[in-house]
Structure formats: C-alpha cells, structure tokens
Amino acid sequence: MSSRPEADLKADERTLDQLMRTAGGQVRLASMLTAASSLIWPLQAAIVAMAISGLLGPHPGPGPITSAAAFIGLGVARALLTNYAEGLLFTAATKVVTGAREEIVRREMQTTDTGGAGSIAALATEKLDTLLPYITRYAPARARVMIVPLIILALGFWFSWAVGLVLVVTGPLIPVFMALIGLAAKEASQRQMADIGSLNDLLIERLSALVDIRLLDAGPAVVSGFASGAESLRAKTMNVLRIAFLSSTVLELFSAIGVAMVAVYVGFALLGSIGFGSYSAPLSPAAGIFLLLLAPDFYQPLRDLSAAWHDKAAALAVAGELAAWRDRTPAALLGQGARTAKLPGPAEISLQGVAVHLGDKVIRYPDMSIRPGESVALMGASGAGKTTLLRLLAGLTAPDEGLVTVAGEKLDTQTADAWRARLGWMPQAPHFLNASVADNISLGQPGNLGEALRAAAVEPVVAALPDGTRTLLGETGGGLSGGEARRLTLARAVFARPDILLADEPTADLDAETASMVMTGLSALAAQGCSLIVATHDPELAARMDRTIRIGAGA
Image (cartoon, rainbow, N blue to C red):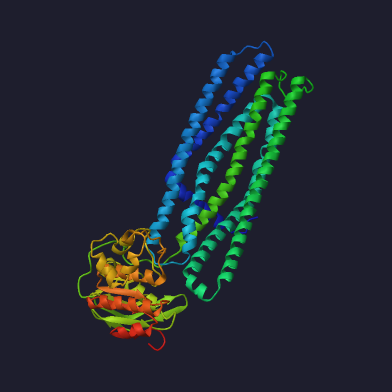
C-alpha cells in the first residue's frame, strides 16, 4: 500500500489533468481512432474464419481472392488509422512537455534562488520526458480497454455462452492485480525520481566546491559519496523494473490461461466431445475459429493498459514534483531581466536600514552612501553577507527591510532593469557562453576588444589560444586557468564600460602575480571613472580602494 496521503495522490492527479488540458482534444480523438482501428480486427477475423471454414467443407462464403482482398484492405485501413492516431498523440505529448518545460524555464529566469538547481534541471529535462509515454500509450490504452473487450465479450456470448463465461471470469482478474501492483509501482517510481533529483543537486554542489575539495584533499570522500548515491539510485531503478516484470508476468499468466481455456473448449466442442456451451445448434467450425482468433485480442487491451500503467505511475510522480515546484515561492528577480535604456542620474548608491532574512538568520547592513566614481572594499568574515549585499546592489534580490536607492531612485521592479544596464558584474566563479572568446567578452556589442584585453592583462593568454579570439570556450572556460578565466571576466567588464562594477572576491585563490594583474586592471577601470564595489578578504586589494566598509560583527 502506498505511504503517501490520499490528498497528495489526488493533488498529483489534478496536476496531471491540468497538464493534459492543453492537448486534451487531440488525445481524446487519437484514443478513439486507436480503439476504432482495434475494432477492425474482428472483421478481419471473421473473414479468416469463413475462408478456413470454406476450405474444410462446402460452406457458402466469399472466395479466396475476395477474402484476401478484403483482409488486406481492412489491414491497410487499420494501419492508416493507427499511424494517424500515433501522429496526433506524439504531437499532443510534445505540446504538453514543451509547455511544462517552458513554464519552468520562464519562472527560473525570473528568480535568483539557486537552491535545488540540479533537481529543477532534472525535472525540466529527463523527468518531463517521462510524460511522453504516458500520453502516447496510457490514454489510448484506456480507451481501447473501455471499448474493445466489451465488443469481443458480446461476440463471445453471441456464439457461445461458455466462451463468454471464460472471458468474464478471467478478464477482471487482470485489472485487479494490475491495480494492486500499480500502487507499489507508483511508490517505487516516486522514490526513483526523488533520487535522480537529489543526485543532480549533489553533483552541482560538489562541482561548485571543487576548489575547496581539492585543497582539503576530500576527493576520495566525495567519490565515495557519489558511489553511494549512484548505488542507491541503481537499487531503486531495479526495484521499479522488478515490479514491472512482476506485473507483466501476472498478466501473461492470466491471458495465457484464458486463451488456453477458450482453445480447449472450442477444440473439444468441434470434435463433439463437449455438447454444452452453445445455444440451439452445435458450435460451427467458422464460429470456433472466429472465437479462437478473437480471444487473444480480448486480453491485449488489458495487457497494453498494464504496460501503460507504469507510465502513469511515473507521470504521477513527475506531476507531484511539478506541483511541489509550483508551490515554492523563490526570491523573485526585480524587473524583467530585459535589456533597456540606462537609468539616468549620477551613479550614487545609498542604503538605509537594510536587512535580509536568510532562514532564521538576519543580516543587517550599516547605512552607507557610495558616491559616483568611488572605489569601495566590502570586508567581513565569511558568511557576513558581502555577496548578498552585491546582489542587493545589483537588484537581483530585494531587501526584507529598509531601502536601497540608486541614481536618486528607489531600486525596485520598475527601476531594476534600467539600473542593471549601468552595471558590470565580476563573479567569483567565472561563467562563459559556449561561444568564442570575442563573443564572451563583447556579448555581441560593438567596442574595442583589444583595449579590453590589454586592460585586463589577458591579451597574451588569448593570443596563445589555438584560434586567438575566435577560440571556442566551454561554459566553464575549458583550457583557461582560474586566474586567466578571472581576467577574462574583467576584460568583459572593461569592454562594457559600466558606470559601476560589482566584483565578488576578484583575487581569491589567485597567486600573487595573477592577483596583482587583476588589481591593476581594476585600477585602470576605476581611472576611467567607473565606481568599484569589491567584496574581498584581500587586505592588499582593499588598500587600493578609496575606503573600506566593514560588514557583519564590528561593522
């Protein structure tokens, strides 16, 4: 029995129904078409039964050529219907998955919350793809189960009440066992999906702390943790497969028993050994062959639904994760993140009574004012809130208390985009586009590339690359050392000629020579009239600034 509350299961089903609304009409039409194509088989079976009966004795009926032409014509019609229905289902499934994926990407673009990035990425990519088999297989299988077995059951009772009774007794056992096994399958699928997201989160966290892991020589412990997580995921995946195979075995057993019982009855009835089961007249060869051909197709829709039941279990697990993601209230990005005209006025910044709530922790910042062209070092202990302050100044997050004023205007949703148009950002962990060096620095804007490279003291590094400024960089700056990547982000800032540069630990983890190059580049940028606001632990860098603002204890 599932351990999840019934309310949660119903909420997952509601979420799944909401996803299906965008393509519900297409799915219903395609499901009816697949049911119609399945109903062509009884007609083909009747043609085959009459043709074989004609070969066994002088019975009236269509000739062999007519029978073959009719059988082939119906087969072609069935194939065309099936192909058209599958095309509709695939289009509908793609529409549903694309819509859900777009919803996730659009909202995540408007948030600054990076928590659980790995699980969200897994949800938007591989997990949403599990909706495809659910839409393309479960809905049409359910439609066939509601129509095809009933038609075949009616035909069975029409020719022989004994065959109809066999189908009535064995048929319902399949959905009963399917439901029992399906409960376990859904629970197992949910555990597997949760582990996939957790493993992705763990990978992103370890990659972001890769430098610290190497410095602490914690590589073996991290590898061991990954191995343990991977083994747990493997075990849960195998558990899902075991349940799937168990379900298939049960279904095959009951369907095989049912078909065998029909075959035994028809065989003995045609031999004259059994005199019951039919109505006024004995069972004819044509009727017996017809029933034998129909019996497997009575169980086939039930078998299809059983296979698709596991697809539904996986889809409900994904729907539950999507519902949980929708219920989250992440920190929203101020503004729309769109390119716009710069906010006019002097590049002055002031903070009054600003505080940020991080769980149970409250970070309070001293009131401050930063004048245009001024260079300021933000110093404090690790965790004091220096990076958070830079994010506040960039309008990436809003303060929970107090007021941030920029260029004489309150920094809020209306002014954030225009304010960010005046900013440059130099993160502690450089990030690049999967594009050339030139595109990573210019971001498609005109300007003096060589001047930016020289100011950041990175021109010799770029010249030594295989294709110079046309060299393609990966998202992590493959081929560049940490210091070189840091200087390349400085070149990007110099190229954009921002009014204010926000730099987060620009000299952290760098050797003295490289750190000196970065500091020289920052000084050159300040000499152009750019305000520098630098979060740092480096006393030498802080000494080069006009003043230092202490954050945290002792501020």
